[in-house]
Length: 299
View 1 (cartoon, helix red, strand yellow):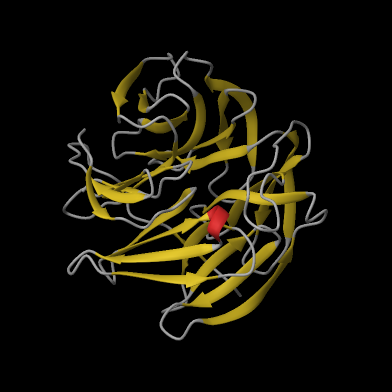
View 2: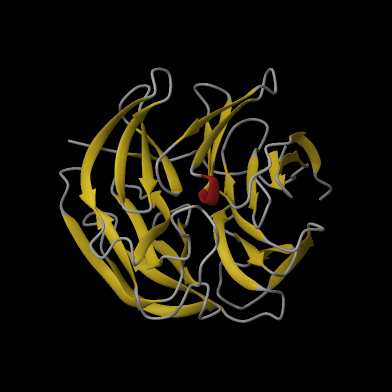
């Protein structure tokens, strides 16, 4: 896996990569500079938008031309073409002591997002994370909010198995990713068990599932991606990326088997063919097919 720079965006902490097949474009955020970027893969042109606080996660929605944006404090509905911004309705209790972090839609159209102690200062400079203040939220299309986990350190990794029977969620500070049973009718999770524990190669950050059900996990401080077997045996292949910090990976089911890895700490986002690292978006080849990007719903 050899990344090639395609967008020198100068990001400090690139996150939230989303592939929009309708536009053949990649969206991602820079948490510490309060930015969203869009890369047009046909022209390699990059457009960026500024927000008033950290932008931590993105999702496609069922509304044409509208994305869900997770800021540190709340959710927005955003139209990139006009830069229109509208309140979603969800606001995080405890902001600015705590903030939102990784988030993603589930198979039923709910949006799941975790929180953590706020480690981004008002000017975007890094602060200190810490244990025990994060939660895992599920936000339904009608706006109903359910808390599924509490006392978390840094919420990361939200993804589902290809058959939608298993949910994965991680806590970076605990150095662990857990698996849960996922109810495909109610959207509930149950039966938490360890899936990927300390490996000696950094700490778990964002993840994605490929078409074979393997979990790709970016290792913060480990300079690699781990591809973990779905059987929970602990088998994992390590793919070096020549960068110390990686934020997360996204895979889409397009014909090019695009994969997105977000490299962090003065780095941006990765595509396979897109990656981001050291403040630059990069491309790299991938031989494993991904899954279609999921959308969240809003009544």
